[in-house]
Length: 435
Image (cartoon, rainbow, N blue to C red; front, side):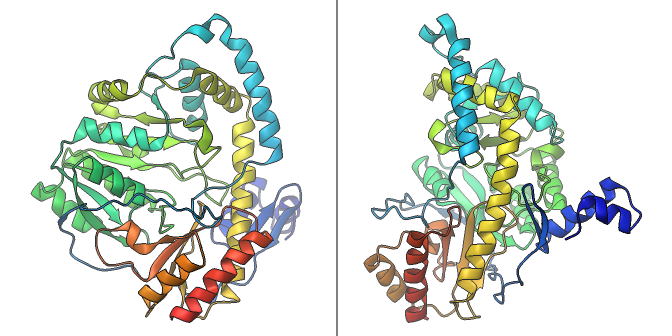
Protein backbone atom coordinates (compact mmCIF):
# COMPACT_ATOMS: atom_id res chain seq x y z
CA UNK A 1 0.00 0.00 0.00
CA UNK A 2 1.13 3.62 -0.41
CA UNK A 3 2.88 5.05 2.61
CA UNK A 4 0.84 7.25 4.91
CA UNK A 5 2.65 10.29 3.58
CA UNK A 6 1.91 9.29 -0.03
CA UNK A 7 -1.74 8.60 0.76
CA UNK A 8 -2.07 11.98 2.45
CA UNK A 9 -0.55 13.74 -0.57
CA UNK A 10 -2.50 11.77 -3.22
CA UNK A 11 -5.87 12.48 -1.66
CA UNK A 12 -5.09 15.92 -0.20
CA UNK A 13 -5.99 14.88 3.34
CA UNK A 14 -4.22 15.32 6.66
CA UNK A 15 -1.89 12.67 8.09
CA UNK A 16 -4.37 11.98 10.88
CA UNK A 17 -7.09 11.26 8.30
CA UNK A 18 -4.71 8.93 6.42
CA UNK A 19 -3.87 7.10 9.66
CA UNK A 20 -7.58 6.76 10.52
CA UNK A 21 -8.28 5.41 7.03
CA UNK A 22 -5.63 2.70 7.30
CA UNK A 23 -6.68 1.84 10.85
CA UNK A 24 -10.25 1.30 9.66
CA UNK A 25 -9.12 -0.89 6.74
CA UNK A 26 -6.89 -2.84 9.13
CA UNK A 27 -9.70 -3.38 11.65
CA UNK A 28 -11.86 -4.81 8.83
CA UNK A 29 -9.07 -7.15 7.76
CA UNK A 30 -8.37 -5.63 4.32
CA UNK A 31 -4.79 -4.60 5.08
CA UNK A 32 -2.18 -5.29 7.76
CA UNK A 33 0.89 -3.49 9.08
CA UNK A 34 4.46 -4.78 9.20
CA UNK A 35 6.66 -2.95 11.73
CA UNK A 36 9.22 -0.73 9.98
CA UNK A 37 7.88 -1.83 6.56
CA UNK A 38 4.47 -0.29 5.99
CA UNK A 39 0.99 -1.56 5.12
CA UNK A 40 0.19 -4.53 2.89
CA UNK A 41 -2.95 -5.97 1.33
CA UNK A 42 -4.30 -8.97 3.24
CA UNK A 43 -4.79 -12.40 1.75
CA UNK A 44 -8.13 -13.28 0.21
CA UNK A 45 -10.97 -13.72 2.72
CA UNK A 46 -11.61 -17.24 3.96
CA UNK A 47 -14.15 -19.31 2.03
CA UNK A 48 -15.51 -20.47 5.37
CA UNK A 49 -18.52 -19.00 7.14
CA UNK A 50 -18.41 -17.99 10.78
CA UNK A 51 -20.01 -20.29 13.39
CA UNK A 52 -23.77 -20.15 13.90
CA UNK A 53 -24.70 -19.09 17.41
CA UNK A 54 -27.16 -21.26 19.30
CA UNK A 55 -30.57 -19.70 19.93
CA UNK A 56 -32.26 -20.78 23.14
CA UNK A 57 -34.24 -19.47 26.10
CA UNK A 58 -31.81 -18.98 28.99
CA UNK A 59 -32.71 -20.51 32.35
CA UNK A 60 -31.07 -21.04 35.70
CA UNK A 61 -28.94 -24.20 35.69
CA UNK A 62 -26.42 -25.91 37.94
CA UNK A 63 -22.74 -26.57 37.32
CA UNK A 64 -22.87 -30.21 38.36
CA UNK A 65 -19.53 -31.44 37.03
CA UNK A 66 -15.96 -30.21 36.70
CA UNK A 67 -14.85 -28.15 33.73
CA UNK A 68 -11.21 -28.13 34.79
CA UNK A 69 -8.86 -29.13 31.98
CA UNK A 70 -6.17 -31.69 32.70
CA UNK A 71 -4.45 -32.48 29.41
CA UNK A 72 -1.45 -34.77 29.41
CA UNK A 73 -0.52 -33.79 25.85
CA UNK A 74 0.42 -30.11 26.39
CA UNK A 75 0.37 -29.26 22.70
CA UNK A 76 0.59 -25.84 21.03
CA UNK A 77 -3.13 -25.74 20.15
CA UNK A 78 -4.39 -26.18 23.70
CA UNK A 79 -3.79 -23.39 26.21
CA UNK A 80 -4.51 -19.84 25.02
CA UNK A 81 -0.98 -18.43 25.00
CA UNK A 82 1.79 -16.90 22.94
CA UNK A 83 5.51 -16.19 23.36
CA UNK A 84 7.44 -13.10 24.41
CA UNK A 85 9.69 -11.62 21.76
CA UNK A 86 13.42 -11.09 22.28
CA UNK A 87 13.15 -7.31 22.57
CA UNK A 88 10.63 -7.55 25.41
CA UNK A 89 12.71 -10.22 27.18
CA UNK A 90 15.76 -7.98 27.08
CA UNK A 91 13.88 -4.96 28.41
CA UNK A 92 12.19 -7.05 31.11
CA UNK A 93 15.61 -8.15 32.35
CA UNK A 94 16.60 -4.50 32.66
CA UNK A 95 13.34 -3.71 34.48
CA UNK A 96 14.00 -6.50 36.98
CA UNK A 97 17.51 -5.19 37.62
CA UNK A 98 16.18 -1.69 38.27
CA UNK A 99 13.43 -3.15 40.48
CA UNK A 100 16.04 -4.95 42.59
CA UNK A 101 17.84 -1.66 43.19
CA UNK A 102 14.55 -0.06 44.25
CA UNK A 103 13.84 -2.75 46.82
CA UNK A 104 16.71 -2.02 49.24
CA UNK A 105 15.50 -2.82 52.79
CA UNK A 106 11.98 -3.59 51.53
CA UNK A 107 13.30 -6.95 50.39
CA UNK A 108 12.54 -8.15 53.95
CA UNK A 109 9.02 -6.68 54.02
CA UNK A 110 5.72 -8.25 53.10
CA UNK A 111 4.03 -6.60 50.11
CA UNK A 112 1.08 -4.24 50.46
CA UNK A 113 -2.06 -6.39 50.23
CA UNK A 114 -3.79 -3.82 48.00
CA UNK A 115 -0.81 -3.67 45.69
CA UNK A 116 2.36 -1.66 45.26
CA UNK A 117 1.47 2.04 44.74
CA UNK A 118 4.09 2.34 41.99
CA UNK A 119 2.34 -0.38 39.99
CA UNK A 120 -1.14 1.00 40.61
CA UNK A 121 0.02 4.42 39.45
CA UNK A 122 1.70 2.92 36.37
CA UNK A 123 -1.47 1.03 35.45
CA UNK A 124 -3.57 4.14 35.98
CA UNK A 125 -1.32 6.22 33.72
CA UNK A 126 -1.17 3.50 31.08
CA UNK A 127 -4.93 3.03 30.80
CA UNK A 128 -5.62 6.78 30.94
CA UNK A 129 -3.73 7.04 27.63
CA UNK A 130 -6.31 4.63 26.19
CA UNK A 131 -9.18 6.81 27.43
CA UNK A 132 -9.94 4.85 30.61
CA UNK A 133 -9.21 6.99 33.65
CA UNK A 134 -8.67 4.96 36.83
CA UNK A 135 -8.07 6.12 40.37
CA UNK A 136 -4.96 4.22 41.50
CA UNK A 137 -6.23 4.36 45.10
CA UNK A 138 -9.18 2.19 44.06
CA UNK A 139 -7.19 -0.46 42.17
CA UNK A 140 -6.43 -3.77 43.87
CA UNK A 141 -3.50 -5.83 42.60
CA UNK A 142 -4.15 -9.59 42.51
CA UNK A 143 -2.27 -12.77 41.64
CA UNK A 144 -3.91 -13.01 38.22
CA UNK A 145 -7.30 -12.42 36.63
CA UNK A 146 -9.02 -15.53 38.00
CA UNK A 147 -8.22 -14.64 41.65
CA UNK A 148 -9.53 -11.13 40.88
CA UNK A 149 -12.79 -12.61 39.58
CA UNK A 150 -13.05 -15.02 42.53
CA UNK A 151 -12.75 -12.18 45.05
CA UNK A 152 -15.35 -10.21 43.07
CA UNK A 153 -17.76 -13.15 43.21
CA UNK A 154 -17.21 -13.49 46.95
CA UNK A 155 -17.88 -9.79 47.43
CA UNK A 156 -21.10 -9.78 45.39
CA UNK A 157 -22.70 -13.20 45.72
CA UNK A 158 -23.25 -16.15 48.02
CA UNK A 159 -23.46 -19.90 47.50
CA UNK A 160 -26.75 -20.73 45.79
CA UNK A 161 -26.98 -17.41 43.91
CA UNK A 162 -27.30 -17.46 40.13
CA UNK A 163 -24.71 -15.66 37.98
CA UNK A 164 -25.27 -14.69 34.33
CA UNK A 165 -22.54 -15.70 31.88
CA UNK A 166 -22.14 -15.78 28.12
CA UNK A 167 -22.74 -19.01 26.22
CA UNK A 168 -20.25 -20.43 25.35
CA UNK A 169 -18.14 -19.33 28.31
CA UNK A 170 -14.49 -19.82 29.26
CA UNK A 171 -14.25 -23.18 31.01
CA UNK A 172 -12.22 -21.72 33.88
CA UNK A 173 -15.13 -19.44 34.79
CA UNK A 174 -17.58 -22.37 34.70
CA UNK A 175 -15.31 -24.44 36.90
CA UNK A 176 -14.86 -21.57 39.37
CA UNK A 177 -18.62 -21.01 39.64
CA UNK A 178 -19.16 -24.72 40.24
CA UNK A 179 -16.52 -24.86 42.95
CA UNK A 180 -18.09 -21.85 44.67
CA UNK A 181 -21.58 -23.36 44.60
CA UNK A 182 -23.08 -20.71 42.31
CA UNK A 183 -25.82 -21.46 39.80
CA UNK A 184 -25.58 -19.99 36.32
CA UNK A 185 -27.74 -18.48 33.60
CA UNK A 186 -26.20 -18.88 30.15
CA UNK A 187 -26.95 -15.93 27.86
CA UNK A 188 -26.79 -16.68 24.09
CA UNK A 189 -24.01 -15.13 22.02
CA UNK A 190 -24.72 -12.84 19.06
CA UNK A 191 -22.44 -11.50 16.35
CA UNK A 192 -21.97 -8.23 18.24
CA UNK A 193 -21.97 -9.62 21.78
CA UNK A 194 -24.70 -11.32 23.81
CA UNK A 195 -28.49 -11.36 23.95
CA UNK A 196 -28.98 -8.32 26.19
CA UNK A 197 -32.77 -8.60 25.94
CA UNK A 198 -32.69 -11.96 27.69
CA UNK A 199 -30.16 -10.66 30.21
CA UNK A 200 -32.37 -7.69 31.06
CA UNK A 201 -35.32 -10.03 31.56
CA UNK A 202 -33.38 -11.97 34.19
CA UNK A 203 -32.18 -8.78 35.85
CA UNK A 204 -35.72 -7.39 35.93
CA UNK A 205 -37.11 -10.61 37.41
CA UNK A 206 -34.34 -10.88 39.99
CA UNK A 207 -33.16 -14.26 38.70
CA UNK A 208 -29.47 -13.36 38.84
CA UNK A 209 -27.41 -11.72 41.56
CA UNK A 210 -24.47 -10.85 39.33
CA UNK A 211 -22.97 -11.35 35.88
CA UNK A 212 -19.53 -12.27 34.55
CA UNK A 213 -18.74 -11.31 30.98
CA UNK A 214 -15.60 -11.17 28.89
CA UNK A 215 -16.42 -8.18 26.71
CA UNK A 216 -13.43 -7.93 24.34
CA UNK A 217 -12.13 -10.82 22.22
CA UNK A 218 -14.14 -13.36 24.19
CA UNK A 219 -12.70 -16.76 24.97
CA UNK A 220 -13.63 -19.08 23.25
CA UNK A 221 -15.86 -17.51 20.58
CA UNK A 222 -13.67 -14.53 19.65
CA UNK A 223 -16.50 -11.97 19.70
CA UNK A 224 -15.98 -8.41 20.90
CA UNK A 225 -19.02 -6.61 22.23
CA UNK A 226 -19.80 -3.49 20.24
CA UNK A 227 -19.47 -0.14 21.99
CA UNK A 228 -23.27 0.03 22.09
CA UNK A 229 -23.45 -3.40 23.73
CA UNK A 230 -20.91 -2.40 26.37
CA UNK A 231 -22.73 0.84 27.06
CA UNK A 232 -26.03 -1.03 27.42
CA UNK A 233 -24.43 -3.63 29.70
CA UNK A 234 -23.16 -0.90 32.02
CA UNK A 235 -26.55 0.82 31.93
CA UNK A 236 -28.35 -2.40 32.88
CA UNK A 237 -25.96 -2.97 35.78
CA UNK A 238 -26.72 0.50 37.12
CA UNK A 239 -30.45 0.42 36.35
CA UNK A 240 -31.00 -2.88 38.16
CA UNK A 241 -28.24 -2.27 40.71
CA UNK A 242 -26.71 -5.63 39.91
CA UNK A 243 -22.94 -6.14 39.86
CA UNK A 244 -21.37 -7.08 36.54
CA UNK A 245 -17.85 -8.55 36.70
CA UNK A 246 -15.98 -7.65 33.52
CA UNK A 247 -13.23 -10.10 32.56
CA UNK A 248 -10.95 -8.00 30.35
CA UNK A 249 -7.85 -10.17 30.13
CA UNK A 250 -7.79 -9.87 26.30
CA UNK A 251 -8.65 -6.16 26.11
CA UNK A 252 -5.26 -4.96 24.82
CA UNK A 253 -4.87 -7.65 22.16
CA UNK A 254 -6.95 -5.97 19.46
CA UNK A 255 -5.49 -6.50 15.98
CA UNK A 256 -6.22 -2.87 15.13
CA UNK A 257 -4.00 -0.11 16.52
CA UNK A 258 -6.70 1.17 18.84
CA UNK A 259 -7.79 -0.62 22.02
CA UNK A 260 -11.56 -0.91 22.53
CA UNK A 261 -12.96 0.71 25.64
CA UNK A 262 -14.35 -1.67 28.28
CA UNK A 263 -17.89 -1.60 29.65
CA UNK A 264 -16.34 -0.08 32.78
CA UNK A 265 -15.83 3.13 30.82
CA UNK A 266 -19.61 3.61 30.68
CA UNK A 267 -20.21 2.69 34.34
CA UNK A 268 -21.26 5.77 36.30
CA UNK A 269 -22.54 4.12 39.47
CA UNK A 270 -19.74 1.68 40.23
CA UNK A 271 -21.70 -1.48 39.48
CA UNK A 272 -19.08 -2.87 37.06
CA UNK A 273 -16.13 -4.64 38.69
CA UNK A 274 -13.34 -4.44 36.11
CA UNK A 275 -10.79 -7.30 36.20
CA UNK A 276 -7.65 -7.60 34.12
CA UNK A 277 -4.22 -9.18 33.96
CA UNK A 278 -0.92 -9.24 32.08
CA UNK A 279 -1.21 -13.02 31.58
CA UNK A 280 -2.15 -12.61 27.90
CA UNK A 281 -0.69 -9.19 27.18
CA UNK A 282 2.77 -9.95 28.63
CA UNK A 283 3.30 -13.22 30.52
CA UNK A 284 1.20 -15.67 32.58
CA UNK A 285 4.21 -16.66 34.69
CA UNK A 286 4.18 -13.43 36.72
CA UNK A 287 0.70 -14.20 38.14
CA UNK A 288 -0.25 -10.53 38.25
CA UNK A 289 -3.68 -9.02 37.73
CA UNK A 290 -5.95 -6.35 39.15
CA UNK A 291 -9.51 -5.33 39.90
CA UNK A 292 -11.31 -2.00 40.02
CA UNK A 293 -14.19 -3.01 42.33
CA UNK A 294 -16.22 0.20 42.21
CA UNK A 295 -18.88 0.51 44.91
CA UNK A 296 -17.99 -2.97 46.19
CA UNK A 297 -14.49 -1.85 47.19
CA UNK A 298 -14.72 -2.51 50.95
CA UNK A 299 -16.19 -5.99 50.58
CA UNK A 300 -13.81 -6.78 47.76
CA UNK A 301 -10.71 -5.87 49.77
CA UNK A 302 -12.01 -7.90 52.70
CA UNK A 303 -12.31 -11.06 50.63
CA UNK A 304 -9.12 -10.34 48.70
CA UNK A 305 -6.96 -9.98 51.80
CA UNK A 306 -8.52 -13.08 53.36
CA UNK A 307 -7.02 -15.26 50.62
CA UNK A 308 -4.11 -13.18 49.27
CA UNK A 309 -1.35 -11.73 51.44
CA UNK A 310 0.07 -9.69 48.61
CA UNK A 311 1.68 -10.25 45.22
CA UNK A 312 5.46 -10.63 44.87
CA UNK A 313 6.96 -7.18 45.36
CA UNK A 314 9.91 -7.65 42.95
CA UNK A 315 7.48 -8.64 40.20
CA UNK A 316 5.20 -5.68 40.90
CA UNK A 317 8.13 -3.25 40.81
CA UNK A 318 9.59 -4.78 37.64
CA UNK A 319 6.25 -4.68 35.80
CA UNK A 320 5.71 -1.09 36.99
CA UNK A 321 9.11 -0.17 35.57
CA UNK A 322 8.36 -1.99 32.31
CA UNK A 323 5.13 0.01 31.94
CA UNK A 324 6.65 3.35 32.99
CA UNK A 325 9.57 2.97 30.57
CA UNK A 326 7.14 2.67 27.65
CA UNK A 327 8.33 -0.82 26.72
CA UNK A 328 5.04 -2.44 27.71
CA UNK A 329 3.13 -0.33 25.17
CA UNK A 330 5.75 -1.02 22.49
CA UNK A 331 5.64 -4.72 23.23
CA UNK A 332 1.85 -4.68 22.96
CA UNK A 333 1.99 -3.14 19.51
CA UNK A 334 4.45 -5.78 18.32
CA UNK A 335 2.36 -8.55 19.87
CA UNK A 336 -0.86 -7.31 18.26
CA UNK A 337 0.78 -7.14 14.83
CA UNK A 338 2.19 -10.62 15.28
CA UNK A 339 -1.12 -12.09 16.43
CA UNK A 340 -2.86 -10.54 13.44
CA UNK A 341 -0.38 -12.23 11.11
CA UNK A 342 -0.74 -15.53 12.95
CA UNK A 343 -4.51 -15.40 12.62
CA UNK A 344 -4.16 -15.02 8.86
CA UNK A 345 -1.59 -17.81 8.63
CA UNK A 346 -3.68 -20.27 10.67
CA UNK A 347 -6.92 -19.42 8.86
CA UNK A 348 -5.25 -19.77 5.45
CA UNK A 349 -3.62 -23.06 6.41
CA UNK A 350 -6.90 -24.52 7.66
CA UNK A 351 -8.96 -23.05 4.80
CA UNK A 352 -6.82 -24.84 2.23
CA UNK A 353 -7.35 -28.20 3.96
CA UNK A 354 -10.88 -28.16 5.36
CA UNK A 355 -14.16 -28.47 3.42
CA UNK A 356 -16.15 -25.27 3.01
CA UNK A 357 -18.93 -26.37 5.37
CA UNK A 358 -16.58 -26.04 8.36
CA UNK A 359 -17.23 -22.71 10.08
CA UNK A 360 -14.40 -20.63 11.58
CA UNK A 361 -14.61 -17.56 13.77
CA UNK A 362 -13.25 -14.23 12.57
CA UNK A 363 -11.72 -12.73 15.73
CA UNK A 364 -10.58 -9.11 15.74
CA UNK A 365 -8.15 -9.77 18.58
CA UNK A 366 -6.92 -12.33 21.06
CA UNK A 367 -5.28 -15.65 20.24
CA UNK A 368 -8.00 -18.29 19.86
CA UNK A 369 -10.01 -19.64 16.95
CA UNK A 370 -13.47 -21.22 17.39
CA UNK A 371 -14.43 -23.84 14.82
CA UNK A 372 -17.78 -25.50 14.17
CA UNK A 373 -18.22 -28.68 12.10
CA UNK A 374 -21.91 -29.25 11.24
CA UNK A 375 -23.00 -32.91 11.31
CA UNK A 376 -19.83 -33.90 13.14
CA UNK A 377 -19.69 -37.45 14.48
CA UNK A 378 -18.81 -36.26 17.96
CA UNK A 379 -17.91 -39.63 19.47
CA UNK A 380 -15.61 -40.55 16.61
CA UNK A 381 -14.01 -37.10 16.60
CA UNK A 382 -13.30 -37.18 20.33
CA UNK A 383 -11.84 -40.67 19.99
CA UNK A 384 -9.54 -39.59 17.16
CA UNK A 385 -8.47 -36.48 19.08
CA UNK A 386 -7.56 -38.61 22.07
CA UNK A 387 -5.81 -41.27 20.00
CA UNK A 388 -3.83 -38.62 18.17
CA UNK A 389 -2.96 -36.84 21.44
CA UNK A 390 -4.20 -33.60 19.92
CA UNK A 391 -4.38 -30.91 22.60
CA UNK A 392 -7.45 -28.82 21.74
CA UNK A 393 -10.43 -27.65 23.81
CA UNK A 394 -13.65 -29.44 22.87
CA UNK A 395 -16.92 -27.48 22.78
CA UNK A 396 -18.63 -29.28 25.67
CA UNK A 397 -16.10 -27.71 28.05
CA UNK A 398 -17.62 -24.25 27.50
CA UNK A 399 -21.23 -24.83 28.53
CA UNK A 400 -23.50 -26.83 30.83
CA UNK A 401 -25.84 -27.22 27.85
CA UNK A 402 -25.36 -29.68 24.99
CA UNK A 403 -25.06 -26.90 22.42
CA UNK A 404 -21.45 -26.95 21.28
CA UNK A 405 -20.57 -30.61 20.76
CA UNK A 406 -19.74 -29.85 17.12
CA UNK A 407 -17.36 -27.05 18.12
CA UNK A 408 -13.84 -26.76 19.49
CA UNK A 409 -11.26 -24.09 20.26
CA UNK A 410 -7.63 -23.92 19.17
CA UNK A 411 -4.83 -21.61 20.20
CA UNK A 412 -3.26 -19.61 17.35
CA UNK A 413 -0.61 -17.78 19.38
CA UNK A 414 2.49 -19.65 18.19
CA UNK A 415 4.41 -19.51 14.95
CA UNK A 416 3.40 -22.10 12.36
CA UNK A 417 6.37 -24.37 13.02
CA UNK A 418 6.67 -27.96 11.81
CA UNK A 419 5.34 -29.08 15.21
CA UNK A 420 2.26 -26.88 14.90
CA UNK A 421 1.68 -27.97 11.29
CA UNK A 422 1.81 -31.61 12.40
CA UNK A 423 -0.81 -30.94 15.08
CA UNK A 424 -3.03 -29.07 12.61
CA UNK A 425 -2.70 -31.85 10.02
CA UNK A 426 -3.74 -34.44 12.61
CA UNK A 427 -6.69 -32.23 13.56
CA UNK A 428 -7.75 -31.81 9.92
CA UNK A 429 -7.54 -35.57 9.42
CA UNK A 430 -9.74 -36.16 12.48
CA UNK A 431 -12.31 -33.67 11.15
CA UNK A 432 -12.38 -35.22 7.69
CA UNK A 433 -12.85 -38.70 9.11
CA UNK A 434 -15.65 -37.57 11.45
CA UNK A 435 -17.74 -35.43 9.12
